[in-house]
Length: 451
Image (spheres, helix red, strand yellow):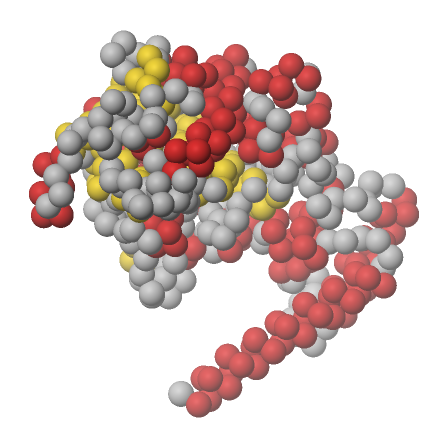
């Protein structure tokens, strides 16, 4: 055990020294700021499985996840019970689905609801932010022995594309980003911020003679020196940093980077999404999917409303509503709706009861997600919650109609992307795993459409 410990410590020290040495070498090269971009970019040539880049018939090709971090209140967004004790101050408005209402702060989404499926009956077993986020993003409860991959990572693992920009992107991600888990860090989402600013670390390389000379020095001098005495055949074996750097250089010189630039859209299109970083992120998501990116996650943080719930949730809805509605509409206008799976939701909902601070607390016993695109049904609402829920914790299931467990929701979404979620995958240590935690497809959410 002591020898193994020393070996691990030695390996960790060498990795640290290598990062420092390469960082200082890049600085000496005078302007090729590649280290951060290389770490985010991956690494990914190691990971892609051989699979068709074309979607299966009737399945979605790409995924957009609008992640509402903090736990949005279903009662003040997608499942209002206006005029009841649990409904509180929130009023409801009609939608494009007859007889179905949303909170009054979501009028634009209400118009687009006819194209989506609203699930009002999700049940989770996790009520802590970090654990619940993990479960909703991966379909599994946290396990101390391994890290499960997110849906976007699975999608990228199961497909193969020739892109010069990352295939898995996280916009505005905070504490718990989409990860590759046991599939490898190469499938971690490439993280970026408000699309009104340029993607960081992309300046300094234009592919001109001067930049090319610097890149050649990096490859032929710095990388070769590092590899010397480590690898027996320098011509056949590249370092991980060299592979990632080459991909970074390719991205930096690529015209596909323009997909991140929402300023290339018309002013009217930008205005429709709202003047917010989240709105711009949703617009960028459409542009990235249009460019061929497989998965884009856009995060809207700030839904944790233990105090002052109604003002807080309404403020968040004012940001979400135009962005969500415009994303649905623009995907339809650009013929991307049928090939894109859209998921909008958070890690759990909020309690039917209102606490002494005018807030709602964590609630995993019946909350809402909005899904659509691909083979997902249009104009459908699944499940319902009681306007007069029980106070007996042992009978909470009686308050939910047509409940959906998290593994079943994930299995349905993966199946909608054409992924066999029952296939056996081996982790790096040889442990057999499947992409779903014994989930099943909820057939009511899906309708097969030709083409």
